[in-house]
Image (cartoon, rainbow, N blue to C red; front, side, top):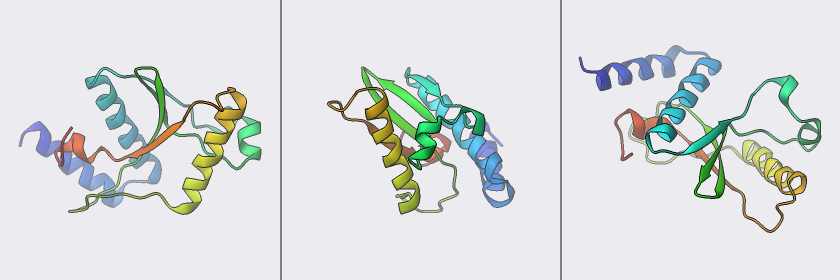
Length: 134
């Protein structure tokens, strides 16, 4: 069994039996490897209660997992790990989307970036594990 097959087997087992935290950590690790492989600078947001800005919490916002510098444009990513057999799309639930929109407004207000566009992406590491393109 080669490394790619081992990765897919581990991923399948995590998707079936792993806790939400294990799946999240696995997805974040895969995302970091992808950013590094493609030469992107990124910041991984701490996800503890103590590190949540109170002003963001009051707005009902959620921090994404990463801020990634795409040549001067900051894009925020929330890495997800889900087993999606034969699926080509993944969508956020409306509640989570609203939390990220609250984060976007918070960033614009706190960082005085009302004129700039703040982009968000939710990623699944499926392409980095063998499906799709990288």
